[in-house]
Image 1 (cartoon, rainbow, N blue to C red):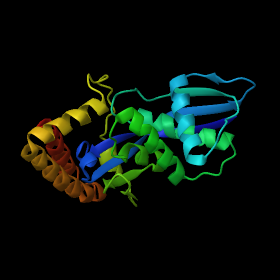
Image 2 (spheres, rainbow, N blue to C red):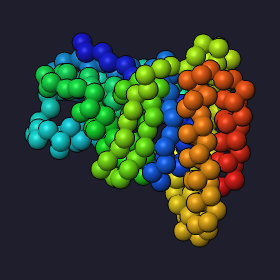
Image 3 (cartoon, helix red, strand yellow):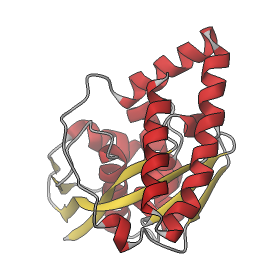
Image 4 (tube, rainbow, N blue to C red):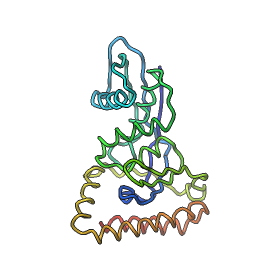
Length: 237
């Protein structure tokens, strides 16, 4: 039996603007999705669509023709469709487990690369921030320079206790729009009213840069101000 888990993630700041090459700060959260792969005489899969997607990505990347049958079990502590990176978490855990089942030597960079390919199916035009955060874990500074180049910096510090002790994780329910739909809507707005979106992107980038020292120094007042300003900025589009 091969068992691999991956955490969910939160966008502290930089959601949507990360798609346009602006920086974002994300953090992993220790609510997890677990994938279990067990050798079997015949395939038994809890999610056949997910299996087809992940197997096709691995076959294409690693030039594999056939994958032996196995039993797949997925369990989750993460609500789906709530902006917590559930698609990236399930893909990364499943990919790592399946690579181990195939006795393929892997590292986090390979898992992240393959998970990003899966995210393209789930999210349409992902930045790469979700998969990078659930794969590498911790606090992540992320920037998409181009479709082929992404700057990923696992930060050498965590959210200080005096900030994190006041964090409350609330499930407010599944939003009406998916992430892919929202990204598409912002893209359409950009095409119609570029000045509005450009202002949003500039303001969001500045706020992300201000947030980094606020986290490092544990400045609660400044942290709250920046997060609120970022939310107001998101609402503007």
